[in-house]
Length: 314
Ligand code: MN
Image (cartoon, rainbow, N blue to C red; front, side, top):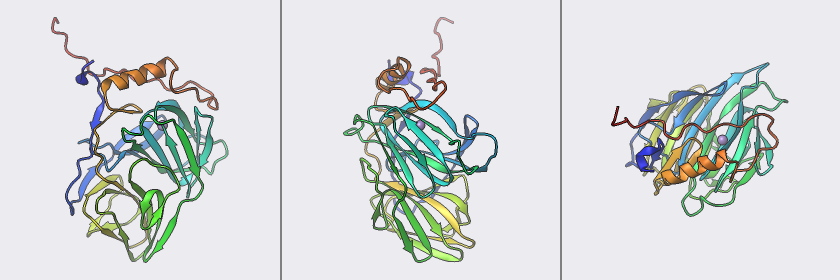
């Protein structure tokens, strides 16, 4: 199978010089019944450090329905990071791990060589859902590691003049999140107090991006609009945010990822042959194992060749 036979997205972190602000509109997609605003990957396939996927869901309130119900599906070569602002999500995986994500805590699933999981709104819930899920590309040296799952109820919080930073992945503002990652990175929620400026220190070797989560915030005189990803490039040693009425922001970052990755469906790989193998393994119930805690059918992989080549005889 040649490289062009697989409609995978080839992703590479391009990096950029300091001072840039590039703005990318999110794409609206549906995860079953749940509308999601997808901030990564973006049109020109840029990653932000090792971060290669970012979904924003909610805020929404519900009474009867179960807005999140993602049936068992596989992952390879990545970590999922789930961070909630409101509500709850229950995770079940093929290792037999079950954990409820709640605001203030973080769930990290390391797919490594392969894992399957399901994510749902639990039966006992607050009727709210508001949060994000990110994927981290694992470097080639660790992407075939055994799968694992970590759930933490609390992450480090740092009070700064004008704001509060909750570090839920990697290291930022002198604090390190309590979960395992395989290359340098950072992810944090930044709360900016009303009428205040908040300055945070950044690693200038990282590239960074911002996503407004709620409220009004400004960066370098520019309002940060919802459903847009603001890519900041590298070579920044600090960033100052301002809010009139109070705001919450997401910041993610890491060194420009030095490897090219292939992303197809829920798999991260390096070659089309690997992707075909992972799809085959999922269909033959190899590699990933069942998610026993979920009742109902699992997700089927899409067709591998989405763009058929023209038949030269027709
Ligand atoms: Mn998943």
